[in-house]
Amino acid sequence: MQGCALALSLGLAALCVASAADLSNGFNSDLGWLSPAKLQSVDLAHNTKPIMYLFNQPWCGACKRLKQTFQDEGATIAKLSEKFILVNVGGDDNSAFGEDYAPDGGYIPRILFAEPNGKLRPDLKNPASGKEYVYFYDSIEKVRSGMKKALKALGSGAKADILEKPATTSASAPPEVQEL
Image 1 (cartoon, rainbow, N blue to C red):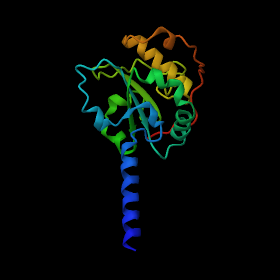
Image 2: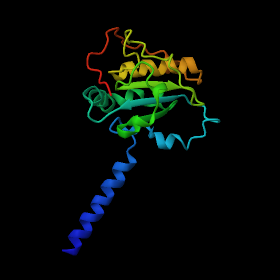
Image 3: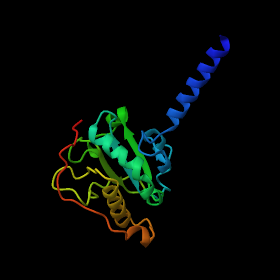
Image 4: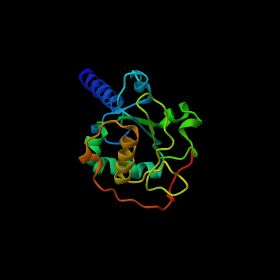
């Protein structure tokens, strides 16, 4: 009986460690996500990569759909994502960010870009968005397009072959955006 209890305890401990180590919150752990807490340990004064913040909540339907596209098609942005610091702002971490990180509202999911030094760039919007919800992304293709736009604007020295692949765009506003 003690052996079963020990095995169960070790199994639960391993599960907790594995869960704690997945900073992607389900948005494809192969992409090298950081938590907001881990970002604080980055020396932004010497950082050369732009920052991409993904704001999401586990209960949000639109976030779940975007999460699935990251799982299914995340490999298509793997090389591009290496040129960024990816920060997954999920769950309770959302409340730690101020109004600057919700320039047109606190809806989710939303993606914001920042300069390598951490300065937020609200001018870098979803190229496929309408007039509302300009930081809302609902597909990996739109995320890739936004990342390419950010790299061009922030001059990170991205390779031309990565930047020049065409992206599918749509000008319609997202009906499923969740308000926080």
